[in-house]
Length: 305
Image (cartoon, rainbow, N blue to C red; front, side, top):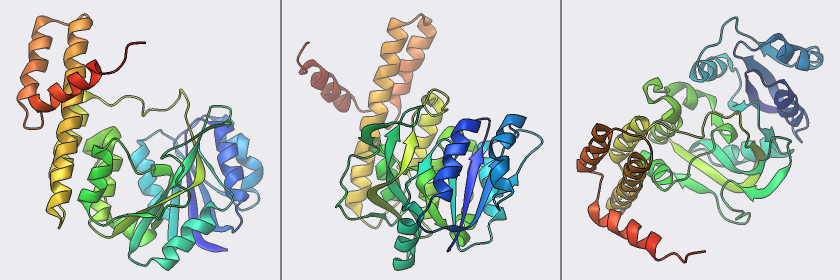
């Protein structure tokens, strides 16, 4: 039995929760503790897993629905084991997930958390043939040793898959979620954690990430993305090249977003004031007219179909 607690964050997805729980129970090496942290779901969700509660799986409910961050925090606070996985109720673990992730942490004492690649599955649980980050199964693990290393992933339109992360419990407890960042708070959280210790990413796909219509990560408000970019801009590294690359990526990302906003203001029913408001935002230090021209000519060079 592995010294790890698996916490499943649950909210009104009974069928998916059953699959998530089944994948945890099918692990090649069992976790010390399995707990479902339900955030005020309807009664059918509890009924869907009631049979497993009689066999040692814990149910930690809530009479009211709170934020997802609140649910994450109480799961971490409840954990008594050395390691903790906080997974979403719509994802599934491959059978050797816990064995491989815990083995990595046991062999790499400077690593405070380890994420991994994942297979993409649809609403019915069928694999699409794609993974989150290609399929470099033989590649070495990526190590993010400071907040700038994490920022480089997000500035480069990538991320650390949140539902795949196994933490050293003491490390995740020492890192607070900044709720003011809303839907993008995971990027800030991992930056803060990387300043405490190394975060690793295993390129082998060890879990299944479900893509479905009920997800809340398909759109991020412009003002929230501005706030995240400003935060990432301030991240630090001992390498000057890291900072230069980070700022270049953020300028490119910000410029592309701003151009899309201007185009939308021209093509959709938007007031003149709204259009000029978008233009004024181009005075931000992250907007680059040279980057805008490169993006424009890059689009123009694409062959017409």
